[in-house]
Image (cartoon, rainbow, N blue to C red; front, side, top):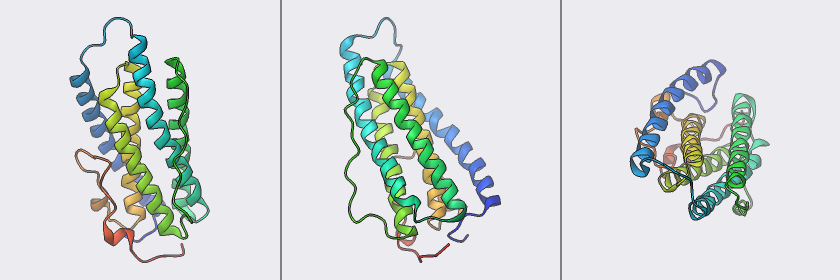
Length: 207
């Protein structure tokens, strides 16, 4: 498969990625449920405060992911630009949902995007690699947050963030040159799997 996604291929891969995402989110929710047990009675202020802290950490990474994708948009063209814009919008939706969750718990939004390395992406491969790295970090952050959440709403939210980022990563692998088979998510994505060296340093195209 070439380095550019065609429209028909994008449709097929989205269906394949969606099936993998369903499996992933089921696993995440099962792990969270087994670790947290039943949540009976009212949530205490201490529990809410603990969740606000974790949510702010997740929000920091989501803000950083949005900033990274914004940097790369100008360097992309064609179908992958449309995909990147879609990812950017979804990551912004993550930011909005986390912000709402923090305020819903009576907390303060204290998160800020982490500073990205300069001078930033210079070409298509740089842009896609940066997006991959931050989506990967966002997946890891969501997976780390899920078991520690003490309130049910935010717990479900961070689990859904993990599923979303896993889908993004599968498509970004293909955009970086992976075959459909190579782009399939692991049974339990960790958020720490870098793009293969052959992809991260593959030939640059002008498409």
